[in-house]
Image (cartoon, rainbow, N blue to C red; front, top):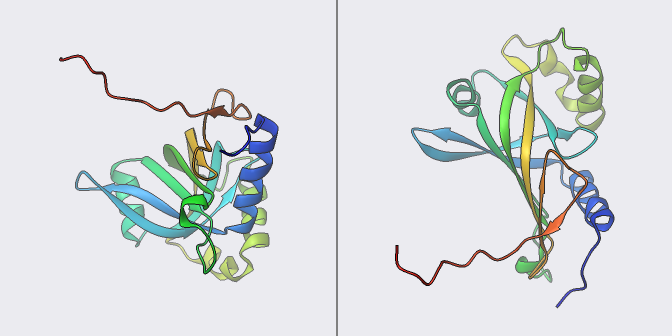
Length: 172
């Protein structure tokens, strides 16, 4: 069994993951079912905010306009010699909102996005592209077997080792 980690160690590990992995799977709702899209992203100062630059023509954007509930799944890349059960992965859940170009944070987010994805600069001039802010409320971070942690937006730097939820033995 892996040693217990402190909240600070978990913080350092999720930060490394989002620096290493530049794309995530955005899960939106399509006809009542999850729909996954591969998207580039940047995170805010903690995991509670993530930003996407999306085209209105994309299916996932149409889904967001109909239902703003989202999940963003970030996972370490698999490869030869790696144990797939030990890959770092993070599932974030919350709500997506369009970020107005008039918002005080817009310029900074755009600069951070372009620093990470300079090839996207041309798309900021396209009328169908917009920045979206994901306001994330829950995080589930897995570092390997027996190393799952949860956090909530009210205390984003506090990570609690996930407790196994077992079905009750009693009859309903």
